[in-house]
Amino acid sequence: MARKRALSAREVDAIKATGVHWVAPSLYMQIRLQGTRSWLFRCSIDGKNHWAGLGACRDVPLTKARDEADRRRLAVRAGADPAPPCATRDQARCTDVSRGGGDIYRIARGRLAQR
Image (cartoon, rainbow, N blue to C red; front, side):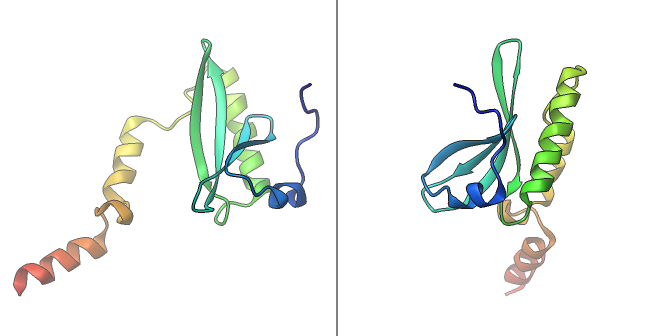
């Protein structure tokens, strides 16, 4: 039977099992083996499921994740693409520090090359 009421913040905090858990319409929480939690948006377009990350649970509160999922769900109904355009994603990769594209890595590489 489908759940009719979205989970409360207390109910979301109580989830401990790894995996992907339904939180609200089109909003899921992923818990990985390391214990990290992140928000996921899911929609279905032409019979195919599409997933998009909405951020880490520690950075994005439940209310903002719900609002973003609602906004994206309405955009998909209007015919928009649920994920950001490739140019935006590629630009984010170029400036993402964890992937070695941020300024701090560029500075560190320059200093190491001077030694």
